[in-house]
Length: 177
Length: 191
Image 1 (cartoon, rainbow over the protein chains, first blue to last red):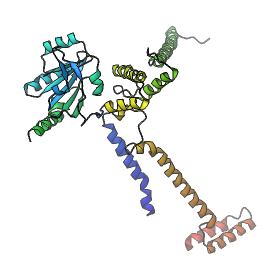
Image 2 (cartoon, rainbow over the protein chains, first blue to last red):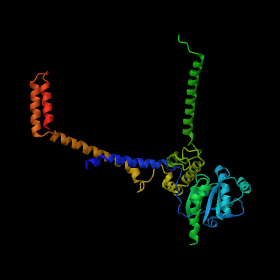
Image 3 (cartoon, chains in turn cyan, green):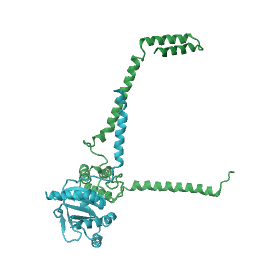
Image 4 (cartoon, rainbow over the protein chains, first blue to last red):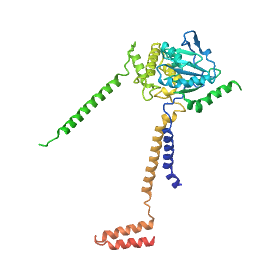
């Protein structure tokens, strides 16, 4: 019994070591969104093309809602993949976050427009309701307009293939049981 | 007089110059951080200003993770400061403002997390560990004390022999070390 007691400090040490070792590989920049499984926030904003006012009902899931801006360098990196995904039949909506409208239109003309609709969120009010703290960020909404997943950062081929395609496929499969 | 080569003199001068510049830069940097939080917001009362100050210091910037909203220069921190100011002006309570931000950015934004089941370990863990430490310390001290007072680890027979030995050494002259050694040896053989 006494012998076993001597092992207690070793046990505590091992537990602590394991705990801290795991911490080495966690990404502190990864925040879980507070909005997972919550409905997409209501909004009423004009489209970037300026032809109509958009609201929550215009976003029909399952779809991706991509937050982007022309001042965001990484968005430019991400853009070609979004074009490709659209061609594959993925529905993508855009939120032009705190941006200049003219610059945004120019960007969409030059780099091709992968979005079904682009919401003009010049003041960042929708971004605030979505808990956006940078760009690019991508939300996944289901058929009911519920936010099911959030990805912060550039979506590249690998990220899409390994993490996000299964999420999207899951949302599509929900629609056609 | 000790001769110092011009090169070394220059090096020395260079070092003190570098140190001066470093000090100046450090001072400026500190000055900058002290002023970073000052916005051009006008408050109706000193109490409101104080509330704004407390809120922005206790809320964490989602982008630059180790700064609060008050100190951060990130665009999102500026937005959040403006939003907090707007809500304060609209007469919302501190709880309402904090809840508004938590609903959007999660509990991550709280530098002072709420006390609930998930954060209980965080809040009470250190105090609990300290208490456990004190209890263990108390147990060990009590045990030792009891051991010392009740028994010296010797049987009655051994105590008698100890007394005899002590008596023996007191009577013998300092040079009489050998009998004691012999006694020791005999002791070892016996046991």
